[in-house]
Amino acid sequence: MREFIAKQKANLQSDIFSGLTVALALVPEAVAFAFVAGVPPMVGLYAAFMIGLITSIFGGRPGMISGATGALAVVMVDLVAEGNAMGPEGTNAGLYYLFATVILMGIIQMLVGALKLGKFVRLIPHPVMMGFVNGLAIVIFISQLGMFTQRIAGEKVWLEGYALYLMVGLVLLTMALMHFLPRLNKKIPAGLIAIVAVSALVILTGFDVATVGSFIRDSGGNGLQGSLPDFQTEIFNVVPLNWETLQFIFPYALILAAIGLIESLMTLNLIDELTETRGSSNRECLAQGGANIVTGLFGGMGGCAMIGQSIINIKGGGRTRISGVVASVTLLIFILFAAPLIEQVPIAALVGVMFMVVIGTFAWSSFRILPKIPVSDAIVLIAVSVLTVLFDLAVAVLVGIILSALVFSWENAKRIRARKHIEDDGTKVYEIWGPLFFGSISAFKSKFDPAGDPDKVVIDFMESRVSDHSALEALFTLVEKYQAIGKTVTIRHLSKECQQLMIKASPKLAAVIEENIDDPRYHVMTQVMQ
Image 1: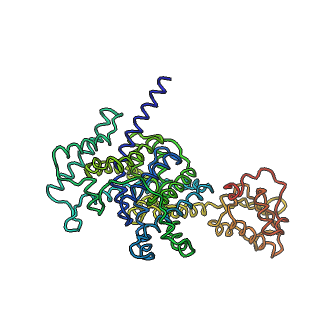
Image 2: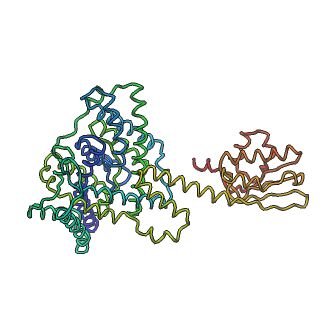
């Protein structure tokens, strides 16, 4: 019992310290994504707090961190701009159209969870997962390069000379602390200690470097100080509840819902692998949807799982829902009470933390396995990595899945075989091997010779699978060809489900199906999926 209590206490400490580190890293990320979307910084911070808190409590993956993300912010830019143009001047209508869209986005995500569609994330191939991880690591790295700039006369220019050397030095110091501290004591929250140590160094020495506060002010904000989020009654005053509004916001809501779920479920899968545990994809869909509905009603920009912060949390020892709750509540405390302190944290310290996340996220083993895996898998891995950088996560994953599906279909289409023999009574038997589906139909048809075959033909499906409607249609067409020239066809070893589907499609096929055969070894794939 003492050992159990001690273990829980150790986990609690790790969760708390990890949550504090995540909260610090959330601040500049949420602010940056808010400005990308074209909304005030507090809209991003409120989203990070509300979505993070709700998904930490109700989500399907303990230890996963959610909040405002860049993948969604990029889509929101046009939405906010078009919304501003649609509303009266000076009403900031784009912001309220964004809130309405986020609410609809949440409803769509909850429907996906309620219909239990989240399980289909398991169909994502491993090369797509590796490409996603590598691409995301590169995206995180590139996003941090913008921190090596300064604003002069309203324009961003790269740091040079002493300013650049100082920035690089502080980043390297943060990374070194995070690398070596765990070697001294694994219980030390390396990320948090590194941020505090570098912050103290900057404050004590008076180094002139960018801080969280200067970052917000340079981006057009007035500082971090805020208040509790309010219910946005203006949504119902500014946004008309009519068909035109739905036509405008629905496409954006659908895209945002898809991107949010893909990023969240991919992150869930990644953390499952890191922790060797399993989360609930459908529960995560419901939690993400509910969180977005709430954040839309209370003035947040919406969001989803954050891969970088999630890995910071996992690497810092965060394993339970407590870490996410601590991160969200701490973020709110920062907003309400500790703004002056947080604004003094140097950006270099946070960049150092994110660079360590990049190193930990990138699948370095992919370089080793690339020469050893099939060429098609290597192409998928590289393509997903590149597309994640060039476009976004949703496009990259969808293209990766499509490429993998096409390769799978092509490979299986080549596996259809027909072993032929003549029985004593002169009947020709075709024993079909391999799956019969839309991709293998052409090869399947080429195995038969209706004109040259004897009067009696048997097609045996003991070692084959009829997978889809295209396969049923191919069988129907083949039988018609034999019958049109006066020959008899018998089909053996079809499962009961397949027999029912064939007879339903064409009742006269009942005469060609041999029912009194034991041991059909398969079921129609569509029936199995149910």
